[in-house]
Length: 422
Ligand SMILES: Cc1cc2nc3c(=O)[nH]c(=O)nc-3n(C[C@H](O)[C@H](O)[C@H](O)COP(=O)(O)OP(=O)(O)OC[C@H]3O[C@@H](n4cnc5c(N)ncnc54)[C@H](O)[C@@H]3O)c2cc1C
Image (cartoon, rainbow, N blue to C red; front, top):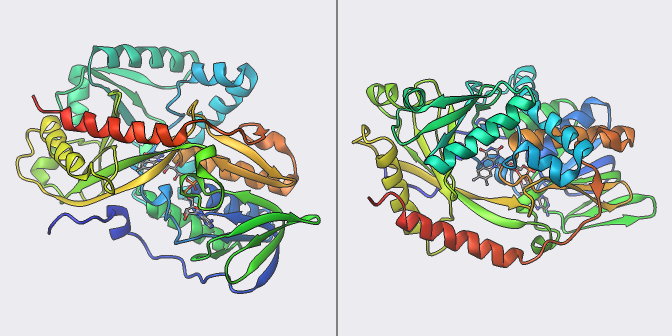
């Protein structure tokens, strides 16, 4: 099979939700824009509280990052916990760190509760040190985690080799709270659970405008509208409604999946199934799926001029990591957009009375998106902001986001061009 510009996750997706575009004018208690983890978790939990909920999705469930990501369910953000507390202040920082540390538990318990078939595996993740600087960075992260009583351990080079099957690393931080899943099937499972709880999901229904009208929100699509008491805007990097350039920098991430490896190959590559990423400045990731495909990812896009560079890099990267895999081919490749904020922290901003926007997970949205969605549902139900993992703030435009996006894209292309050549 030749390599196709398609997502592996889409190719082996479970049954889609039966849903139709919005075609009338409706009244609701809560309207949610976007059917990714944030919107779907908000819908599920609000519907479970008995609220009348409508979700409007421009494309299909999981069209955004939720259907395209690596599938690493992490406890925490890229930003180490000490830096989170420095950025937000101690009280708010501790609140967010604490909530995010528990996010994998929330994800895996939802999967169990709603019997979501999404290849969920809670065997931990490995943050792998590519060089001495990376190892020093991991030791600092370890110290911060140990201070917070997190069950994280630093593996030496030999243990890292045993677990990954690659001799490229000097060590790795093992986080047993974390795990992996099939991201799109997790989103589809949440959608089915939300629908069973009573939420109504309209796909193929791009929202064109939302505005306050009297005491309500009026949300318009081309063929209908929803009037609602509360609004949750959960479109993250895929937003088509608000000016993207002012909220975050869009960074692309590309992935390549091999054919299912042979049993012999599989025995020597991630035999325990941990999800991995490395300490390189231009980060890359690798993991297995349930059928034994090896999935390699890195910063980059398949849309621009760098496509060939990224494909060649992925081959070199795979051969450098796992020289024992001599026979393989990539069968799938796809990319997605990440909403990166300047301090890499997620945000909840005020859109107007009773309206909030959740975004900016900065490449860490499975746990955080699930958590923020659930918390937003509690906010919608109770009107109480204390449930939210971060305070609601007024939107604050970020600067030079287009320039930064170009810089990330060019930097990743250059780095991939140079990488793994020796
Ligand atoms: C390639 C890649 C790899 C990643 N890897 C990881 C990882 O391993 N671990 C991790 O934790 N996170 C990862 N992330 C981040 C994570 O996927 C996202 O943070 C998360 O999916 C965001 O979920 P969300 O629901 O907020 O937004 P999304 O899943 O992006 O959903 C937003 C939805 O809003 C819809 N929408 C947009 N505009 C409108 C409109 N006008 N009207 C109606 N609907 C609209 C879109 O169609 C989309 O379906 C990765 C992201 C990418 C792209």
